[in-house]
Image (cartoon, rainbow, N blue to C red; front, side, top):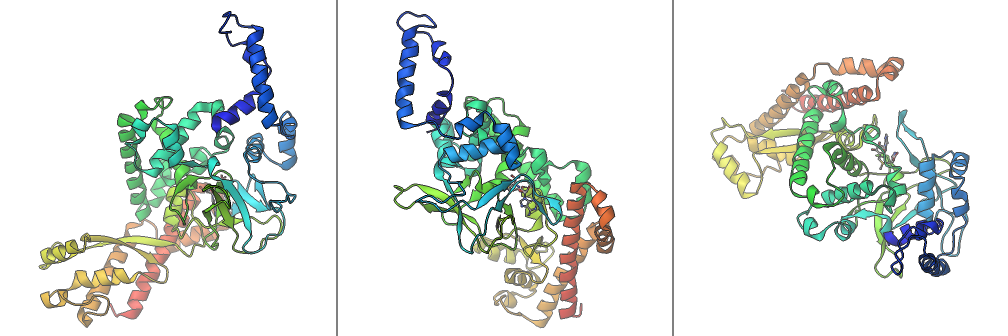
Amino acid sequence: MSSQLLFAQNSGCSLHVAARRLCTTCNKKNCRRVVEEKTRTLTWFCLFRSPKKYDASRQNVEDSANQRGWSKEVFNFYLWLKENGVYLSDKASWAHPPHRLVIAEETKDEGEFSGRGLLSSRNVNLGEKVLEIPDRLMLTKKLALETLPASVMELVEDEYVAIALLLLFEHNKGDSSFFKPYLDILPSLDEINPLFWWSDEDLLLLQGSPTLSACQQLREKLVREYTYLENHIIPQIPNLARIDFRQFQWAFGILFSRAICFPSTKRIALVPYADLLNHSPFCSAFIDEESIPLGNGRTEAVVYVDRLYQPYEQVYVSYGPRSNQELLLLYGFSLERNPFDCVEITIGLDKEDPLYNEKCRMLDAYEKSPQQSFPLYMDRYPVEMAEFLRFCCVDTLEELEGDFGTVVSENNEKLALQKLANYISDQLSQYPTSLEEDERIVRDRVMFQTLSRNQRMAIRQRLGEKRILRSTLRNLQRNVRL
Ligand SMILES: C[S@@+](CC[C@H](N)C(=O)[O-])C[C@H]1O[C@@H](n2cnc3c(N)ncnc32)[C@H](O)[C@@H]1O
């Protein structure tokens, strides 16, 4: 498919391209036979693929792009989508209603720059389908297996790694990649700005925050993955031998911030155009995959909106119930208002506990570890955390046989809540600044705007964490006299 399209594009060039080839009969460069052979091929080709009207406008790409307020790259991307079967016309056809979206080069959310996005170009009704992207435009593991050497790819199990390799392979192909117009609009690492890419100086602003250790873990994971691929996989893929760690991080930055895991099939894909939709935690629309009716098993990515949109409003999807830590680590932004924001805490058995071995044995039987992590939300924490805390604080063998879903004993309940309160107080004491100090910085809007984006994100992040920790501590203190 991709070679067919490349041929279609090249076929627009003059026949000199063909004449430059050597004639297999007389071994000369400009032999008429070669030209005639190429002309015949072109004629056949044109019978099936008549030149598209918008080909003419290609000569004026910049003018047309300017008229729409787009960069040349976005305009070429738009043409590529149209050429490849994405219905983008604002007029209805017999098979399609008018397309309802338009690309915006710049969007803002909560006063922060959020890159490109998609706006409604007219009224959009609740439940309307606004996007249909055919499977063949997506970068998937399936395509990676078809494109990259099978002997190497059988060693790659991870879907993300397979797509990252495909992305780098296509990127290295440059102009000859079918995906070039898409690759040209993908952001650089500096533009994505995920936490793992921040300078140490900026990361210092997250001192004491669990987000800092999450970032460190992600960095180590990326190094481990790259080292493995560099030793075992990359040298065996023609065209990839020159991949360095920075390019590898770019590919993962792209995947972390734009790959979609379709809820209905759990398949992971980079979906051009659909990946221009920005995230709102208040939105319940999402990008999914559907079979095309009478499409012989082919699928497409689709989005059904979850509310009415007026013309020129930004259309959002949800990237899932993500905390600010996840958003910052993977997507390079965090939100002031995020109902899914939480702080992950890790609680463990006390090694000095006389029942330590017995408790480990019991946990082992349920394939659970002696250290477990749980999310703390502003107004709640999970039932499983309460159960685990009660289990950790049990101090008799009889109680170990009990049901931890309810209060085991008054004393046990108090100990469990005390353990949690101690953990939270300890966590709060790790930050060099207090919640009140951070609030003062954020409240001074003029001063706050003079900070760099990373500084603003970091301060917002640690303030959000402190608010959750403080609120949980207050609730604990209110429930039990600690
Ligand atoms: C799937 S892409 C969406 C398109 C992207 N804005 C672009 O310019 O290509 C995800 C990226 O968009 C940006 N983004 C999405 N939602 C955002 C939001 N609510 N606030 C700030 N940035 C957002 C982040 O940079 C994120 O990494």
